[in-house]
View 1 (cartoon, rainbow, N blue to C red):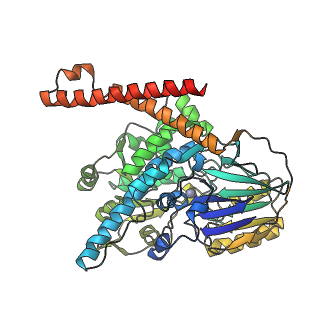
View 2: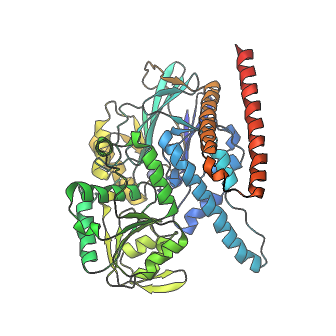
View 3: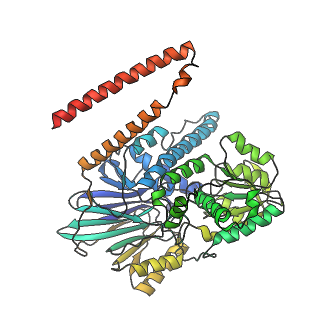
Length: 552
Ligand SMILES: [Zn+2]
């Protein structure tokens, strides 16, 4: 049994591992490398494995540094399934298309320049078509089900409390009649994060692959960071300024909306919200908020309680979602106090850069960071106190108030990580530390040895470890068996559901009274389209009826 690390080894992005066990290759996550241009360049390196050798891909959560290279697997010919939770699948529907869009437009931009310089055009890392093919192969599973991939490999997803649908994964491998348990924490959230559940601990494993983002750092604000945020907002608004919150579109933005709503509806703390508009200015944030609303079964008890009491936790009266680029630009033409939540969270792309360009030089402005700022990002420069920055080629003087509240982090800090290990009932023999920078990894490894007497490994990129066979033997009872046949059943079930939904949508396309208002050309076109559709439906019904009879 072997484990190989292809990403997030001594760094925080590009999560990608392969477990080779019981004659199979199981990939865990396939994320994009993000950050500096040197890091991003790794996305374009030749893959160090043949995608056709991979039997299964398990996806812990939808963040792009864990999911963002999945379309590339399909571009290279992988046709197996991606197994994840339903919320992860729904979020990937929008996030992978968004990522493909960025890949395409970045390449187009570069090719314009290359063309002028007489250079050959580049190919995008992957296209929207590649992403669409990948998305057809996603299969949603439930938390806590023990899922049998084949006779010797079973997997279980549990809630890692990091974002909607995020999971830790436990893999049970049986070789020579002995079962070895390998746990992957993936990104671990912290307790009391709004909307989502507290992280669940993998209670028993032989080997643990653990994240270390804050392996040696404590969050300064341990609880109620929103109180601090509202104080800063209130001070800024009272001075007539605008508050700009760079925020990740998925997860953090919804937490912000929830926090605003909670204060407005429950505590009534901020009366200024009655007057000051809040703008969510990012198309991805808007669609992600819709996905969150559709996946309320993943919410924590508090958020579910709001829904039951008739309050939509992700909406409030002064909340506006900007739609067009024009709407977005308008926000900077009008100087009245407002709150703008926009992406990207690290200010490296997206509409946030326009808002910064038009507001950073104003003393009245506050830029409020509520998330991790990677080394090399524009956000990190500002958070570190840069006096001037370059945005779209212009040098902008930084006169705005810059604040950083780290209590909103989606990751647990060093105390949370220690508590996690202390709660594992049957401790692992070894812990592999991934998803962290060196200054977090090494002190964390020392602490684990000192506190728990567990050996750790800090793998380099492409490191491979032989895992000794035969850990603890345990009886497994399966909730679901995911053989090829089951995959196909699930695929069919999804297709049937999707067709049903689409038929319903079609039936509402043209209201009867609208038919009276159609012109001659429209009437002719629709007659053609609808008679074609009627023929297709008749054929489908006939074929399905025929085949179900034959099968019996
Ligand atoms: Zn994450």
